[in-house]
Structures are given as C-alpha cells and as structure tokens.
Length: 540
Image 1 (cartoon, rainbow, N blue to C red):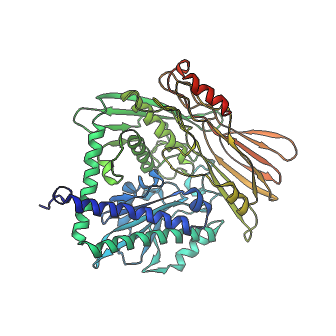
Image 2 (image 1 turned 30 degrees about the vertical axis):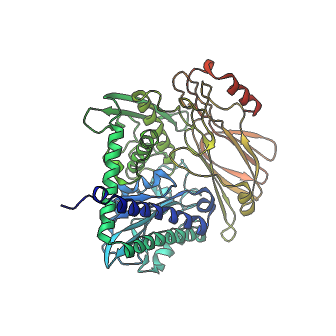
Image 3 (image 1 turned 90 degrees about the vertical axis):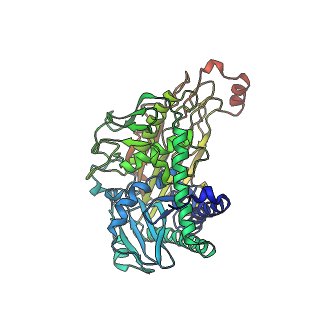
C-alpha cells in the first residue's frame, strides 16, 4: 500500500502541488500573449488544466470554471478514440458526443511523457470566433439541429509528433469564415499545452516522477474529501426550485432542480421535470449542466477547496437524456450557455432553501453575447463581444456591477481594441441608471452598451435572456430588472428585438443592449439610509 504523501511528507507535498497548480496559470498567460482573436487576448474565453494519465483533472487555471468542469466528463470519452500517443501529438475535438460543450469550444490535448512513458495530459479549451455553420460566431439560437451549426470534430490529431497535419488543417480552413484567426487561436492553444508539458517535465527533472504522481493522486483525493465535508452541511431534505428560459413566440423552457440531501450520503441535484429538448439551439450537454452545478456549490461552500476532478466525487447530478439539460443527437446546442446559466440559477434557488442566508439573490442570468460579421473573404471581419452583467444582492452585501457571471469569469473587450480592429464604433458604454433589484442589499446595476456599424453591411447575432422573466429576489428583496435590445436604424426607425435573434445591419445602424439588473436581497424598507444616499449621488 502506497503511503499518503500529504500525511507522510507534507512539506514536499505542498511544494509539488503548488508547482503543479502554477503551471495552468502559466499556460493561460501564454494564450493571452499569443492568441490571434480578441476572444483569447482580451475576453479570455478559454481554460487550462493539467490531467493525469487517466484524464482526471489535477490542477486548473483561474479562467473559465465551466470549461474545465466539463473535462472530467469529456476525457473518458475522448481518450479511447486515440489509438496511440506520441510526444508532440496535439488532439483537438468539439463534438458533444465526446463531451464537447458546443462547436465553438474546441478542446486541445497534448500528452506529457516523462522518462519515456505517458504521465498525463496538458489541456486547453477555448471559444473560437467561428467554426462555420448557418450563422457567424457559433452562438446563434435559431438552428434546429447540430448539422446547421458548423464543423463537428471528433478527437483527431492536428499535430502528429510535432508536425502539422495538413489534411486536417485543410478541412478546418475550408469550413469556417475566418480560417487564419481559427488556426492562429488553435496554435495559441497548442503553445499553451506545450508550456504545460514543459512545466511537468521540468518538475520531473527535480523530483522523482513517482512522488509527483502520488502528490497528484493525493491532491485529487483531498479535494474530494474536503468538498464532501463542506457539502455535509446541507441539511437533510428535498429542496426544489424552477426557473425559465425564453424560447420564441412567447414560449418558455423550464429548468427544474430538486436538491436531495440525506444524512451520510452525498447530495444530488435532479433535473427531472425540466422541459424536453427543443428545435432551438439551447439544448445543453450534460457535461455543461454538471459543471454548472459544481460552480454553484463551489461558490457557496467551496472556499479553499482545490479545483480538480475530485470535486465531482462529492455530489451527483441526474438529468433525463434528451431533455433541454442533457443534449443528445441531433439537437442544436450553439446557445446552450443560456441553459447552463439557468441551471445555475435553479441550483442556487434550491440551495437557498437549504442554507438560508448563505446564497445570494439571482444574478443577471448570464452574459450577453453579440457577433457582428461581414465583408468579403479577403477582408472578412468577425467581431465577437461578451457584455458582462450584475450579481444579485447577498446577506450583508450589495450586488456588484459590471462583473462576469460567477460561472464564466470572462472580461469584456476594451473599446479601444474593438474600434482599432473592427469596423464598429462603441457609441455608449456605462451603467443603466435605476436598473437593479431593490432590497436591503440591492442588486448590481445593469449595463448599457451600444455599437454602430461602420461597414457597408453585416450580420448581427445576439444571444441573451431575461427579457420576460426577471432575476428573482431573496428574503423579501425585489426582482432584478429585465433586459432590452433595440436596433436604431440609420434612417430613423427603431426596432424592439427579442432576446435571441439574427438580423442584417446597414452602415450607421446602432445596436443598443441593456443587460438585466441583479436582484435584491432583504426587505427594501430596511436599506441603510446612507447607502441609498450614495446610490443617488453616484447616479445609480
């Protein structure tokens, strides 16, 4: 029986796990410095991780939680698809049948060899600006099947023993609108994975590989045990909550979550009763649903818990295959992020009943994504932006404004970078005054961001939500405010748009987006007078 390195040699264990934890963050820095698109360089829509030889996540970078949260589901499906691994191989995939999230999110894996044997994997998952399909950007909600959404990649080697596979590259280039950008970002992911490989190999030159392997296993086991102890605080009982996504024609998709907790057993989150899958691209792969639940639990009970595959031993998630929270072929899933956000909201709502006072009111309901794309092939532009939102008020704290939803940890694209790189002018960017839920602790303020098209024409694609059903308040707090989208045409007309749509733009058209405001916590009548006065002084 192997000794527990953490117990027997705690100093050595801490040295090794902290060295391993630093490597994915170094990988992230390499992507920011070498990425081609603003999605990688500015928005940071990517994630990095180190895995053991079985595909278990050992350490992850501080980027998108829900990307790496899907790796424990994806890698057991993807790794057996590769017959043989060689040093310098780079495998890519995005197919939801292999645990992919949606087609723009491409997983990149590179094997780590130490002393001639496979020791683990360096991994990076990134959102790409375009992978083909009916609409630019890969986030359109209007497709009915996955066949309309772009290039589907099973696990395939894009680099073989360090040499670019020209045949695979040619397939990729022929099936997207911005091939140089896509290949540039894939190369950035490869560079990040190379940094991960080098980091582990350098560590293995200083310490015995078997000691590193034991530290990795102990780290994962420690995470599972510690998270299990934290989740044991959830009292016994069943706690159910339901939330809603806007579909179209005023129809709704319901997400129902029942948290079941029993003494001595790990808690489970059951999504039975959620709507069936729809012929609209909001069907969420189960790996992403499970990642959303993990994000909720970590944000409430996970302080200090190492972020790795051990987390997923501490709780269960169930969902009906083919439902809107458990994608199956051939359902469309491009806009599945909306559903993941609502999975989080439903799980938060259930957990708030189990742990009163420890869960905040609802956030804005997820980032708003916008794509403006046009031009001929040689001068094609494909602008993608993430409009951040607002958190709900919490017990003792107002909700923060202009911050990414807890599930994603993204950044917005700076105005200067947008106007330097694309034929788009940002006309307005700031707080939307009065757009928040009232409470003893108010919700975060909504944002207003407006874009003017400077090119002759373009296609606009928007993915958002919460126009019809506002974020919910807690403990007597008011609901948040609802979103709105308008197109101000150059000729003077104004169009009110739904939360998910595509449209054509002409030169001078302005797209105005107001995000939802965070919900309030506690009775508004109990709000501190000085806090209310400061809100007024700040123009909120």
